[in-house]
Length: 334
Image 1 (cartoon, rainbow, N blue to C red):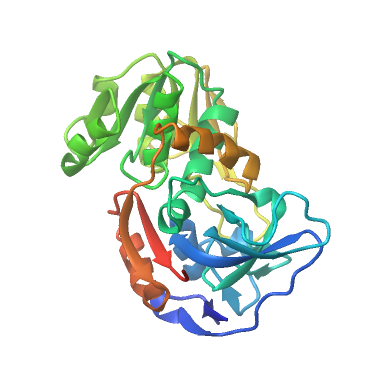
Image 2 (cartoon, one colour):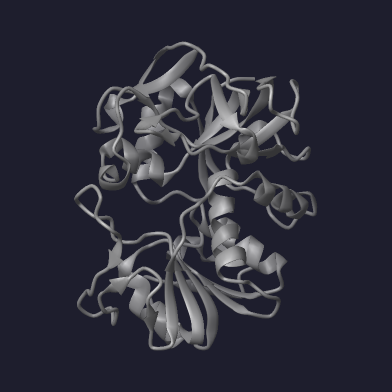
């Protein structure tokens, strides 16, 4: 099969499309013929070695975590899927310092990480969903305890996670504020955002107060203003915690001038408001719940551009600009 492999950490040029063996199928695995994958920021952060303190690997590796495709074969212990099923999901390819992801014509994915693909979506649309939508769902619904009528702030609302966070929050009946640049204000309104905020023009705390939840995909620069916008008992959930430089170092939130955040472990209570981290987990059950929202027209993917597998390096370059509306998809098979 053809796959994009890496033999070392480095820039996009270390991605090499070549022939490799089809992965072996164990009893608990599902062999998926990959039709499409997508590029997430975590992919190029892993490729550059930025996360090696927490996920160092043995090369060669195949990056990629989102997948949409067709079941080719199933392991002897599999009961939920059968050959020919159209499925999609999120694969955590990191096992015992190896990484076998989805930038390939075939991928073995655990049964629990998959769901049936929504019939209303093609494979390219479906591949744009899992990582971003699962992150938003697990942060807002599971960690945040999202309830109808609550007020939710979403940072980077035009990004791969933010787009889904907005739609999920609106589907739950929340009032949603979201940040983006000036060129994305109408786009935010089109997603249903009640209070679109141009982060280049005004501090959010001038517009917002008494919010229940804030989802941060930016990092420490927005923590202080986000905490000010929350009510007492509110939760700031970050996708971008400080990353340690040395392997084995425990993640902490360290004090930074002007943030109002003192040193403390993740989950710290700050002025009666909680700062939490979310890390996406591969859960097909969450995708099944999202399927209901997708089929009801309440959640939809947004695709910035579709690349071929041969152009995977260019897909990474575009993702690294940090100015992508929605998701970058990689078309791999039919």
